[in-house]
Image 1 (cartoon, rainbow, N blue to C red):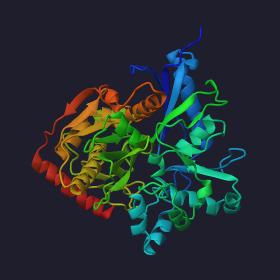
Image 2 (tube, rainbow, N blue to C red):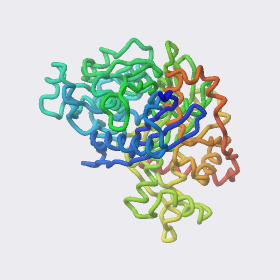
Image 3 (cartoon, rainbow, N blue to C red):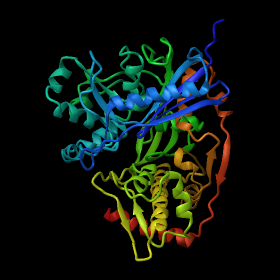
Image 4 (cartoon, rainbow, N blue to C red):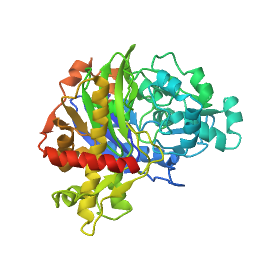
Length: 495
């Protein structure tokens, strides 16, 4: 008896680990598995991933999820992928061997190159075409750096021997046994090489940023068939890869924010606010990004986005570098053990400041320490720092829209922290809606793969699946909140 494929395998490839979910058409999670992989910091401000270690974490999480679900791999109808964006690498087409470790989105080594381009007057044109600021966050200067710093790489690129891409592209390459070199618009729009108006990779930007377009993948709509599995341990050959989006766009899709004006914030390694602006891109005048949300068929949805580079990563830093606690979840009880931070302000600028400040050379700062300051006050200040960054982003977003947001949907691992969510609601002055499924990044990949595979017909079916777990209503003291934001502004100014 032949088993009819009916399950979706979602791969959520993040900054610190890879998660796989096996889900049925009723959105029951049959299994979930996560595998962390090493982070490499060869110099201050440099952040790298070994592509083989990253791929090994994906394989291990796939195999663990399938084992835990106790299902026949033949039941997998489609694979969906969501990924850390901007992280980029270059590899050999013939062998698949990476030329260098992947340069992670947090990596700041190209800050001087970006400044030189800015000084030469190129930023307005880049922003006009791509909706992005000229910052080392994005992929193009990372790819150019690899070509400049690996012997012979530029000559090999000119001969067509090399391929480049973001992590989605690399995963499909590996999953398809090297048969598919592809991406989709949400990831492509984060490279500084993809114009918002469409039309394919920009020769003008490629020449300016010194990235040959011959290196770059073919770009398909988010629900296209990107390739089929070949030679992947634990998976049958021929499983279609049907849905891909960058992690923040996938989270917006997984939060069922399908209508203009709907917004979400994802609290992961970093924290990311994204607002659906519909069929037209809205240029930002307040330091935000204009980006592609997703493309389904010929229809493209655009977004405004604000990013802070350190959210969950701040908690990891307190855990791993300072030894404040053994498990990240312990920060909530520690921070809640004091009524406030005692005047301590922690600016999580460990890898620079993102939107709306865009200061790549900024660094983390703890201000207001006294003899009475202990671990609890610093832990609480860390949570406040995460929430204050988001408050800055939402202030800028409201200014671009000309109207305040009415509500915000939240997700990601740190959204399980009730204290952080209450602090966030207090600082924003709007209710926060937390869904029953916090892993909306993976859920977005599941939705896209299911649409591509025909499991669901359209987004109206998906909207009906969204379920709320809890709403956090603003309840803070206005005077105390105003004083906190003033202290935060002073600290950010000197970070």
